[in-house]
Length: 415
Ligand code: GLO
Ligand code: MG
Ligand code: MG
Image 1 (cartoon, helix red, strand yellow):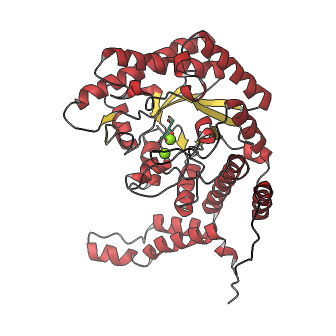
Image 2 (spheres, rainbow, N blue to C red; image 1 turned 90 degrees about the vertical axis):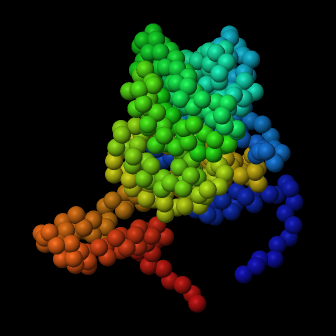
Image 3 (cartoon, rainbow, N blue to C red; image 1 turned 180 degrees about the vertical axis):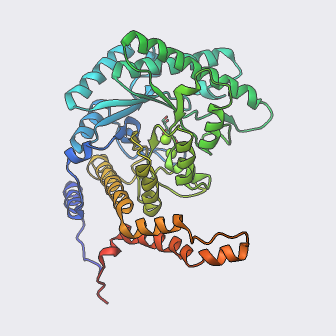
């Protein structure tokens, strides 16, 4: 049914959005939201809606506002790139420490903790030939930048450092020698680990967890470490001096983008003991990095992902690395986009718990594992012995959808 609607004048629009957001229901309290290791990126909240073909649609916001809004929503942790908060020209200078001090104050005032810091190695012109460029001065600068970020992280009390290498790749093949570039990139990570060991010792803190983040496309045409699996191979390649200090920050959409099953990619990181940090968002296969908020596109896949993580006791951060759509206002970013993303995550996490304790799934899974008991070297006989049991695969999938959409509680349709 279409509701006839009067025009909504600009000064009444926020009130309408607030009323409808409230009418949606299903919101958790800030106290409940704070119980989850949900981390809010400065860059996600401050994203102004710009892209190659898009002008910004939102005004700029600084860290003080973002931290305050996260606190109000109940997002207990804050993450940042170095240059989200410190102008490039101030990095490493006194001005940097003055800003860091003000960030520390804003965090304390709002009861928010900094969990992760990351280095911007993709935006500035200095990274045109990647952070592992041929020019030794650029590589020296890259080492300075990642080491500097580690020091900022320790100052702010972070536990994690993330590395999305961004422009580590090329547009045209032949000019860049891949093995050499990877060796150079490893040297930057060694510099970060060394600065970490030194700073942690001086401050009496544990070292950080250094987490690599892969993305298959963008911002180069060809990426040298395009997937989490490539990152795992890189960590194990012998190129790094401190491989035990380095793990992964997979991003849900980055795995989906190249056609992977994100859950399977995460499983490979889990068995390698390297799933330390996780960027949560949503989007589509074989498209660009649309960074839609968690669960808006693939809620069933997300439920499956969280079942895997819950059943393996994953207790690392869930970093809300998405982009509020450019149709969402700044008011909408903090009153609709972040709170609803957090609440969908919590609901899916709780549902994953329901799946793990569901008697139907429990019995079906146990039955599949028990097998038929018919031992035989005859393939046809073995297949026949399991035939009826294997119907449970589809039944389990059905049960998960039932739990997701509430169908296990029944639903009455009016026809
Ligand atoms: C971009 C990445 C980016 C990283 C961030 C953290 O596609 O997802 O947001 O997560 O730079 O290192
Ligand atoms: Mg990311
Ligand atoms: Mg992304």
